[in-house]
Image 1: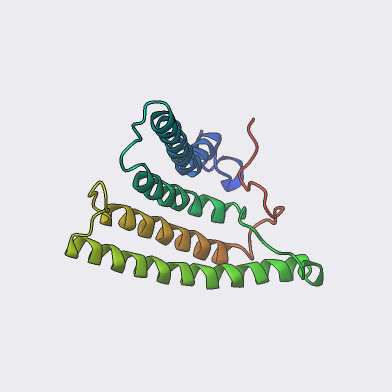
Image 2: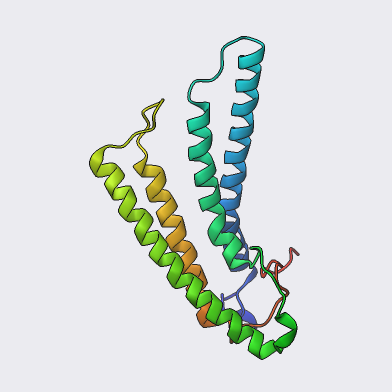
Length: 182
C-alpha cells in the first residue's frame, strides 16, 4: 500500500511516526520532570534525615527546568495548547479567524526566530568566555544552545502554521490536531 493511499492522505504508518516524533519531546520532558522529582526527594531526605543534602541540586534543577520548558515549546505551539484569551473570538467568522490566527502565528514565528538568534548569540558568548555554573562548574553553553535550538524549531512550527493555517481544516482551539488512536 502506498503512502498516498486514500487520495493523498497519509497512511497509518506515517501518522504513527508523526505522532511519535511529536510526542518524543514531551516524553523527554516528562522524564526530566521525574528526575527533578527524584532529585528533590533525595535532597529532602538527605537534608533532614541524614544531614547531607545533595550538592548542586538547585543548579541541576534550574538547568533541567529550562531544558524541560524548551522541549515542550514546539509541541505546545503545534497543537495550539498555549494559553490564549478569547475576548474577541466572537467577532470573527471561521475564515476570518483562520486569517487572524495565521497573522498571529507569523508574527509570533518571526519573533520567536529572533529570540532564538539572540539566545544562540548568548550561548556562543557563554562558550567563548567559558562560563560555568557556580557550584558544580558545569558549562552553561550546551543548555543555552539546546534552548536556542528548540526556540528556533518553535519559530519554524509557527511559520508553517501561518502558511498552512488559512487552508487547513479548522479544529477546536486547544485540541490535539493529531487524529485519534484507532
